[in-house]
Length: 169
Image (cartoon, rainbow, N blue to C red; front, side, top):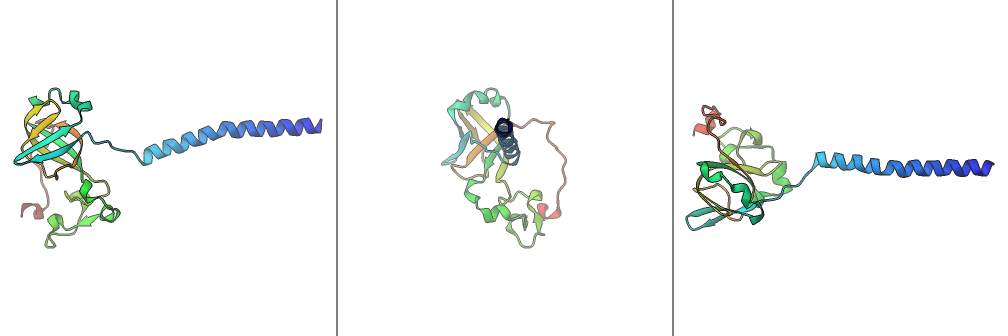
């Protein structure tokens, strides 16, 4: 009888451990989802002569329906040519690279060095042709990954805004 009880006890412990392993992994997976995620570019910035294009993947072309009705679009893009661990660690800069400007936190600037290299530019839409958005200009390099587009909606955006004095120089 002692052998049976010991065997039953070991089997019960084994079953409990096996039952707990998936929940531990699920908890780890949920924590990882909250701590990190991935972004997938939807296209690239293309500069051809004096033309600036947002060339989107054909797979997302249907998402452009109606964009031609707007005058401007927010383009969210990735500072891919500026990505190093050292640059991501910089949290204070002299705005515009000018040492005469006060040391300022990167979240109070449009500096390309920051923990996450997400950038946004408000661009004038010239036309939309299939998967290509023709824009007036953008402060991104050729072949820069485009992450997302959002229409500029008058009235949603702040018209009267203030900022630091170095911004007016």
